[in-house]
Image (cartoon, rainbow, N blue to C red; front, side, top):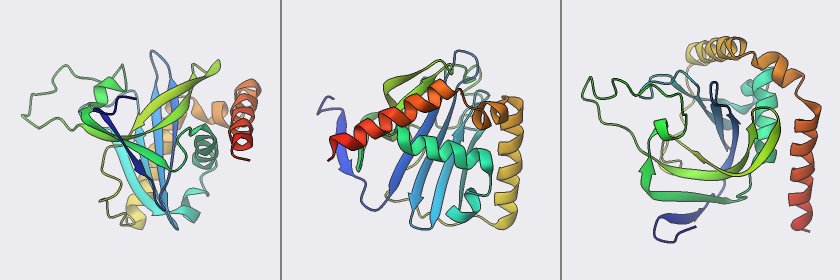
Length: 201
C-alpha cells in the first residue's frame, strides 16, 4: 500500500468485519463494528442512490444474533477479515458509487447535496458470484469509527431495520443462499480462516 495514500491505525477495542458479495448485477456489502456489547451494522445494497439506501443501525449484540441470516453473515464476515487489529485511512476517499457498480448516480447532484466520501476501510476476502473467495478487497465504512458515538437505536428503529433487512434478503434470495450456503464457499472461508490463525501460532 502507498504510504502517501493509506495510513494504518490500530483498531483498539473495536472489532471490524465485512461481508462483500461481488456480482455485476446484485452486489452488496454488510459491514460490522463490534463495540463491547453493541454492534454497528451498515448495509450497502444494489439499489443504493446517493446513500439513500445505505442502512445503518446500532443495536445490542445479543439482539443481532436473534436474526439467523444476519448472525450467519456476521460469522462469515469475521472469518473473511485479513487485517486483524488494523484499519486503514484513505486520505483521498472513495464514493459509494465506486464500491457498488450498480449504484445509481444518474441524478447525483439534483438536490445539491454534498457527496459523502468514505475514508476508513479494512481488507477482507470477498465472495465472487458465489463461485469462489477472492483475496484483498477493501471494505469502506460510511463514518469515522473512532469518533462515532455508537448510541443504540430505539427498539422501534431496530425492528424497522430488521424488517427492511429481511425484505432485502428475501428480494435478493439471500435466505436460501445464506442458510444453505454453497458448501464449497463456506468450506473455503473456514479453511482460509484456519490458515490465517495458524500463521499467528
